[in-house]
Image 1: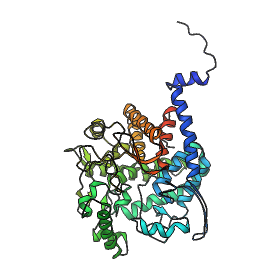
Image 2: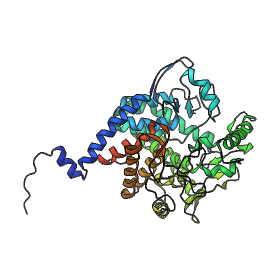
Image 3: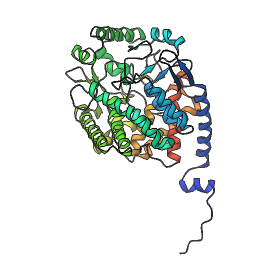
Image 4: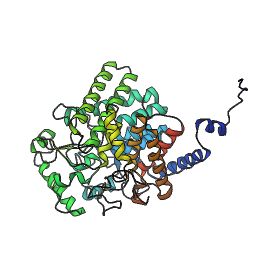
Length: 449
């Protein structure tokens, strides 16, 4: 059979050849326009007298969260690469502007002086300075830099930001890897990014399931840690809240791997080799110490004794992002993702398994991470599934995420059963749906060098 000559391929033909409908292209164009408007509205730009630095970042929500948070800014930079790489670079520069000499980057920066006092009075946060928190967040920084470099930043941006990013991961290892296992610890629930997850209820000894109860439990931890000057080594000895968190360490393992690739791209083969070995050590320790065959879940480890925390949080699925996660373990986690008594839902992924006694698809006042769906974790899990060849399940999560935004807007979190939006409005990291859809339609894998 002789094929006829193929003429020029127009946009409609290109989409058909890629298996992409015009409807999806139209949805992408509309979504990009809406995200650009959201990021214009949430932009914060100015000069901070307290550090004599300019700032330019996307706040999570103008009404509810008008400050800069660490992993929010990492997500925002990734989204920005889809339409404004210059601003994506600026987002990371602003995040790293007040990095301390030891490599530490605060999880929260109060750039604007007139909002500082109200924030310090209302937020359950420990402070390093009047403007910088004394806490970390899930270490997503390397993946953010990789996205910026890959999508237009190039070698110039890599050379500028790589030393600071490497210093941050060196801080994680030096200060938070307390036993040399490759796993890092957190000293308060907020450092996990999942502030009031039910896996911490018993460990933090909440007196009752209420905002007041959590405030009291957190204050007791903070006051105890203040007696040792919040010195990391002494907080370990105090043993009031010392947790190897699954989400934090899954992100840490994957980002060390990504950082190794970035170092190799920059010509630092020795640094790349060291970071690759560190990533493998973290992944092996996470699997060896936190996985339970009994309930097909990963458990956080609490206290210096490392006793296992309860299971049932979506955090237990995050090792799907780790490339070294064994296939049999991945298969069992996928089963739980698809099981309607666990994490299967019309609008996945609920932050707590549906079979868990604490599961609530609706918010419980301002208690977070006890059932509703959060799009940043959908983004993380879908990327992990695509890396492991489960594009069918990844696509279902991506499609559900887009449907949530289209029906309820950019909200902080959503009802996994009905799709209703809750929490802060105009919530910027929910714009990660743009990255999900753009990557899929352009045939990309997860951003890496």
